[in-house]
Image: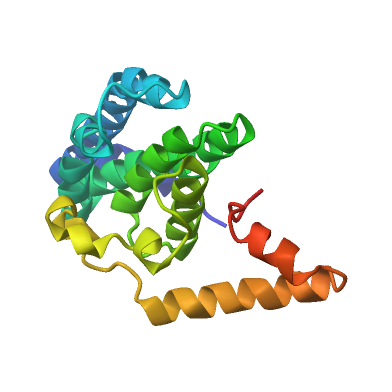
Length: 204
């Protein structure tokens, strides 16, 4: 295999204007991702400690979620960087913070972070299920009813990013699947215990 032309080819690529532009865009995207994550540490810390200083809507704005979603939709290196930041926020709010708040019985705080997560991925049925559980356990709702899954009755509080909220049919299918799985895994479960399980988050 002849490798002599490789150094010359690499040198030519380094001098190519399009390659230089691409590398500059990649560096800008990496810098944006790093700086954005650093800026979001404080509001995320407040949410993690369970002492939010505002509503979930305020944190959606403070975390810059609408702007990140616009950047992500634009594509390119900048869009990919914005999507990585969104995924980072989603993982922290929908999983790590949620588990911590449920373990400490901070259900209102769990509901706050889950609603933020739902703003990032409104199609995620698991997040809406966990949100319904948090609301039920916090007393915000009497029971994890359909209204708890998709609070579309207050449409003015939902951003355009939430237009793909799962339908009631999708949620019914999701819950039926979970009940069948539980019945197979724990055949001795009584109807009373199954009802109690419906207020348990999906990952606990």
